[in-house]
Length: 114
Image (tube, rainbow, N blue to C red; front, side, top):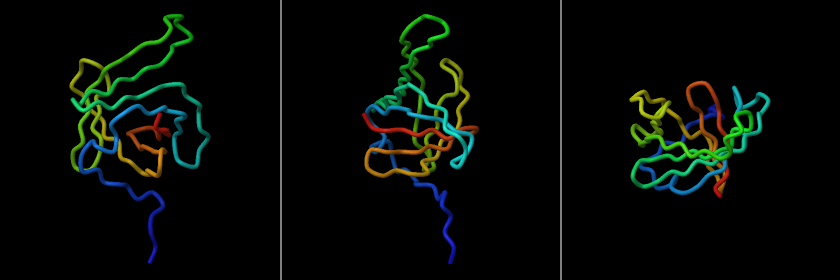
């Protein structure tokens, strides 16, 4: 019997997500080159996901961007853009200890709990 290495972990609610996570990298696929990131995601109980990061190109410094999220059908449904009611599904493909890997529509995100 063969098992998929990318079996998704079905979330029952947001309890395993709550708190701050450092998004350390993103990649087009699990086996592709990882692009380092310096971003923090904070999953809050009220369904807000606050993204904190620095945009070095703009010179603005640190920015906090709140978006909505929920857990439904075992996956994270997160707003793609603040203020717009367009959402993308992000499935948890790995969660072990303080490490989590998410597969969103176009990218994989690698996170470490802060």
